[in-house]
Image 1 (cartoon, rainbow, N blue to C red):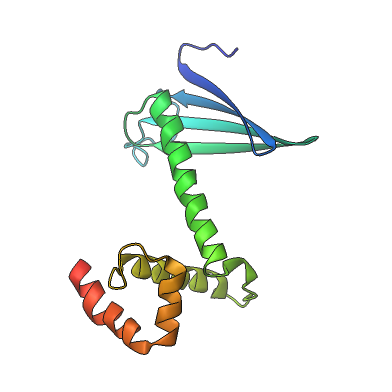
Image 2 (image 1 turned 90 degrees about the horizontal axis):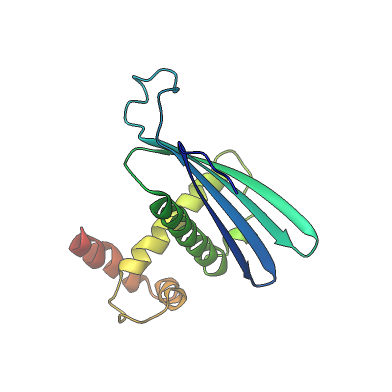
Length: 164
């Protein structure tokens, strides 16, 4: 058990889907030791999260560092980090499954970043479009855009101006 009155600490253990994860959260509010304090004057806390992932006999350890510019407690820190990764992983899954991002073979200069940005823009714009109905899956929307250019015109000239 970790005990330091200056550092807030929390440990979580999860076992799911054939793997185990131990997360240790460390949060400190004392930012006096930061060099060039004027440059970092908005920093309220620093956090370190150590994640140990166990799959069968293999253990991987990941160290994550966070600079925080608002008052937060250790439980809010855990929630914010987990929520961020849920969103990030959910978006990545959609980009991979629906937009086939992992199959991209672009390797020239900035093409990877550029195509990734365009996929995210297309994903977000298509998500805004409810002209096909509110419950139609994104993959069907994308198919309809490919099959009929009028659907893309509707997205560009009707849906986007309405939302903005």
